[in-house]
Length: 445
Image 1 (cartoon, rainbow, N blue to C red):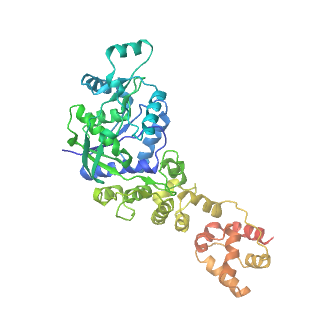
Image 2 (cartoon, helix red, strand yellow):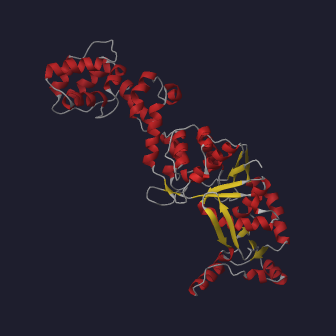
């Protein structure tokens, strides 16, 4: 059977590293197996979902290098869900409920005071047709719960190993709200069956959902063994908290705008929580090496500093052709080769372009006026090449007797406005004599 997988985000926020990870894993697995990757937008929550988020998710996935064979929205498939719901109603597995949230909370509080788990008591299963008619006549509209079997569901998880969910410890889930809208627990099953999904790869927070959904699959007349499940342990933020859509600093959108490279993120996420160290491989090579057995059953920490280190490594080896379209207008290959070794993010190249082609104003360097005026007097005439820096500093060393930091540091600060940065041997020829003269004069004043 050909592998078919799906990634199913809700368009209620920007895609963050935590949910980009299962998207990438699904894609790499499908690519390795020669299978099909589907994108499903779980947009039935119209109160929080927006078109802006839906578009942003697709933009982020495309930027990351993920392609899909088909994209569909749950909001376009309501008739299919209604048909499946009717089947469950007729079989007695979906039953109407009329309790208010206040009534449900009171029941939960009562059970907890007695030392019992706050599981729904199935009171509405005892509702007679007359009682239901009376409730509806009084203006109440039912929501619908799925009656779970009283059993333990088991499966062999491709990442976590043997797993089980005791259904009696879970409240019968609401599958249809009072307004008629369907919940994810139900629609996901219907879609997975309809689209012939073979492997469901998602976060560990869905383990309980899997137990419930296996029961729903059987209630719909299908065999749960047609699916294989893999649950990835969740990623945590630097402080150990769960990643979420509210952690905007590690949304793909923010990382992209900050200048983090897609390939660095893909490689970092692919290795995170596995037995392998992050590398810098194209997606096809990442796919060839994909293996569920490499993943730990423990949560992994998303460390931005590690991601930036990988991004820095990637930038240092990128050639000019790969980045030229994203560099400041006028930037040359010589400029890129001069600065790439000092970049954590590509956006930082803008600052160095201001150094060699802009009008930065250096600080006045207290106590170095005489030295800088001597440096100005010894500044070689143009044309300049990559020998101008050693020639100039050599003449200064002979004239002043300075060496080491005392020789070089005031010059770098005067010419660039910074104490550290790319090699001056490469920067000075790009800067030109006119800029160098002006900055030396300012710093010496």
